Structure formats: structure tokens, C-alpha cells
Amino acid sequence: MKSRFVVVTALVICAVAISSFAADAPDANRKVPASFKLQLAPAVERTPQQMDAADAVNALNGAVREVPFRPTMSAAQYAAIKSAPAAATRPGIGSALPTAGGTILAKFVGVSQCQGDGLCWYPPDVAGSIGKTQFVSVSNNVFSVFSRSGLLLKTNSLNGFFGYFTTSMFDPRVQYDEEYQRWVITADSFQDSSNNQFLGIAVSQTSSATGKWWIYFVNTKNFDASGGFYDYPMLGLTQDAA
Image: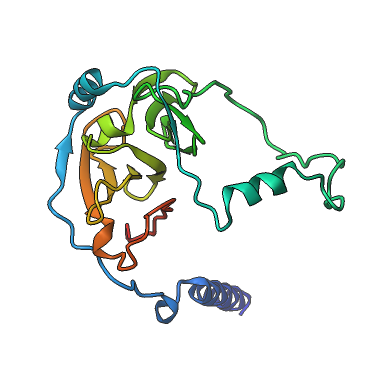
């Protein structure tokens, strides 16, 4: 009798655990459908050798590239607000900063916004992501790959990386997809006409960011009916690689 009671108890605990797991599972009915899907041309393969060769020919050394000011107010209003003294003390000013509670395992200096295509970009608009063996850093017209200990393995301009030289590329984003162990990088270009402004999408062919990539281009004018400037795109990944 005692052994039966133990078995029944174990089964009840199992059932509770399964029901809890089911309750925490994603609800397909709450999934937000895509508003539209982009039809992309077939990917173009881009090799590290092609990136280096393109940068060797197209580098523009010593120039300064400033991303145009595009806030919701005039540049003069923005400058006045930034230079004016604070009207009130903001909460938390002067208090100790919170600590992360972890240990720093590696610390190293990344590339600057003056590397890549030789232009000095302001602002740099930096982003980064870490994988199992590499850290990828992107900023305005710079793509760079480091080992997790900080050794620089590769650097290129975004134009050299994507193989596009009609206008400069900027506002890059990078994510490491842990599910498929691939790197994903996006960056947009300045418009070259009222009908053309491109978003570049790159997916690594392996888990290494120093290898070959698949490159896609989307003309943002195809889904931006307002004729506005496509700026500051974000990047996110889901479990189904969407």
C-alpha cells in the first residue's frame, strides 16, 4: 500500500509540473502577425577577400562624415536645451551607481569611428553582440570582429563589407542568433535619389563572423510611401529566425 501511495504521489507531481510547463508555453493565439513580408532578391555571396579588396580601392582617408541632424526640433532649439542649466535635480544624481554584481573577464579597446573607410564619423552609433568564440562590433561604417579575449581578427568598412559604394552606409546593428549559430548584421545607406535608399542585411554562412556571408539589399522606398528618410533601423530575432 505504501509503495502505491508513493507512485501515485510521484505521478501527481509529474502532472502538476507538466501542466505548469504547458501554462508557460507560448500562446499561438497571442502571436503578432507580420504586417507585410519583404520579397528579396536572391542573396549574393560575399567573401572576406572581396571585402578587403574593395576597401583597398575605395578608402577615403582623412575626411570627416557627420550624420545629418534629424530630431523633432530645430538644431538651434536642441543646442539651447543642451547648453541650458538643469531646472531641477534629476532623481538619482549624486547617488552611487548600481553594480552589475558580476566579474569582468575581459576588457579591451575596440576600433574607433575613424577606422573602416578612413572617414571619421560623428556620432559613431555603436552596437555589438557576442557569440561562443567571437565579439562583433559595428559602428558608423565600421565592421570589426574580435576574439572573446580582445584580439582583433578582422575589420572593414560597412561599404566594403556589404559591397555597396554608391553612398555611405551607417546605423548598423548586429545580433548573434544562438538557435542557428549565425551572425546577422543590418545597415542602411544614404539615399542616392528620391527612388533609392537601401537597407543591407547580412547573414553569416557559419558561426564565424570572419568567414563568408550572404548579402541582401532592400530598397526602403518600396515600403516607405511618405518619401521620408529611412533612419535608425532596429534589429531583433525570434526563435523561428523571423
